[in-house]
Image (tube, rainbow, N blue to C red; front, side, top):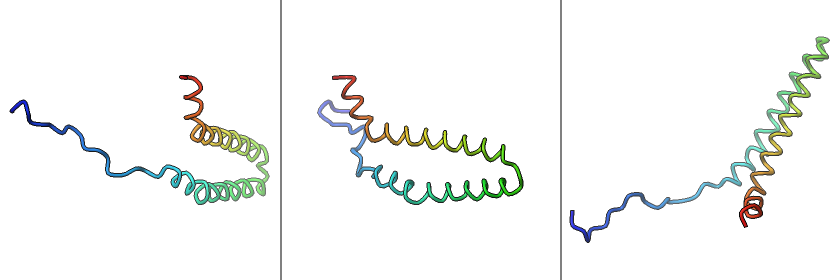
Length: 87
């Protein structure tokens, strides 16, 4: 190998990933469908008289939604938090 030759180790990426579009898609299409399925399951259990299971499942679902909302918040304001910490 001649010292004046250039070696390309990795090419520049051709494009970017539209993360905002992905998040918008999940928030507008997938999340309502999942919530509707959970609602049908909860109504079905409640009609059978399993109120305690419905309340437990509902509490777990609410905590899960809180975690998802927290993750989405960090996704959108994470860069600002990092700038505050490291500047």
